[in-house]
Length: 449
Image (cartoon, rainbow, N blue to C red; front, top):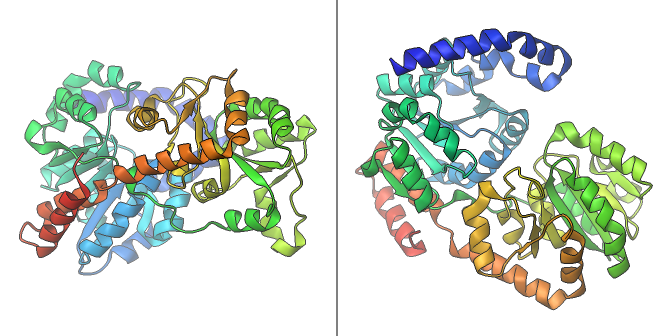
């Protein structure tokens, strides 16, 4: 009955929103991309890759953050469950691009809309032995069809953020009969586990495995990192990553004051959303400051590109390079945090022992940030405090280095979620496997959350 009313509401929303969606598709490329796949047209590349005798695992990661979080998990699944093929779906275009780069386009597709016929088309084509959902991507029709086909559904890195918790509580009558049938829920923290249980997850099937993002390492040195090393060999870098609207302007406002403290400085500015690259380009153009775009470097060899100059700004208008570029930072600012937007992941710079400055709004990464704060491994600054907070770290290299080392210690201390997750997946798919025993031992060695 709950599913009936959900589908009724979904249909009404689709009909009511059709004019807006049609207009957006006519005017914006990202709304057209992958539309056929989202409506249930399984791409031929997926049918070809899916043909064969090996069983399939379907893993869904909604966007860039989730794709990065499960990258290590996918590698470990391929190693531990070598008899399985893994197919990854995403919702956003940026997540799709990163997933295709990391896992190969033949194994990546757009997740279908939560329409019964679209969901069934992919389940028929893939015949998965398991569905893995990253974080809290709960879609009632997808879950219901999996339950009816006895396909185990496991949620990894599960969390309920402070911002989304009230909305989930309002709809708990919808979620309770659905979430109670999940095979296993692996939560990031005890708070997440208790919230998921309150929404209807089975307490016996819900446990704390830790945060997969603590296990993520930059896969390799990005091309942008290599070029910045050469072009800015004698400079210090300030990396402002995952910035949202208003934060680039705040960084530009602070820039003259920072250069007064440290003239030998170059800023790398990395907006979170690709659709804002042109907006930030215009902002930089109108600022009168010296700047260039990372994407322009692809047209020339490194030798043909002019070396960076003091005070120059580099717009990192590419996808998937920020995590590696953080390794160059003398100080990193993690965006999405000056205004109430939930924040972004401070672990990306932490893994490189980079001192971190972040705004006061980090609800989506509260557990991670609070842990860093408890170890004096991050500096929280309001918009008015931003320039001074960065300047202090730039002016005191020994203190900044110590803060960065504490951040890396927190990052390494919390590792182990991947091994614990793999052990659970292995147990569900093959309870008798010797690999399970070895992974379980590894998980115990690395410690429990």
